[in-house]
Image (cartoon, rainbow, N blue to C red; front, side):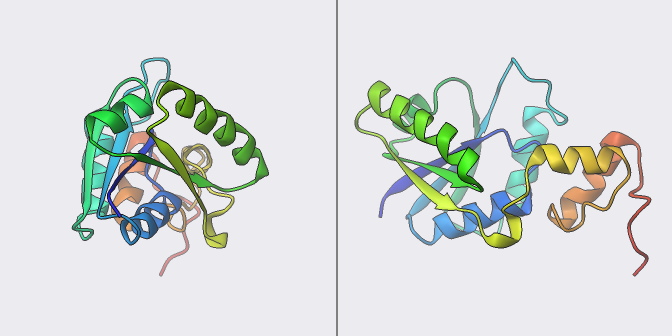
Length: 167
């Protein structure tokens, strides 16, 4: 079904992001995960770290590529010869914002459509911001991010996940 982009900050990548990427990879021939370089934010991880983390966790998905980009998502989609932008929806509050963005993108480039994928119930509450808040206080983030990302997040906060149950 062609090519789509899935843009975002992914700071850090969550299981919710992986869920959307995996599901989208079954719909499209190719998914390009675009990691946004946003100079107005102070990310926890550098752009290279975020790209590498996504490459690590998406390595098993043969039709998924991960690259960074700067600027408008519609311009990134056009550069990648994609005609669809994938966006995940968790709640009605996401829908209001995402609908405005989709309509704006449609005005900026009528050739690019937006496809909304509702997040799986298991991740409907999850955001990178929540992961960062829990991790910064030493809480257990193992149910929120891929296992390979957990240590990276704790290392960044210099915490060891003090609330993690011993297994």
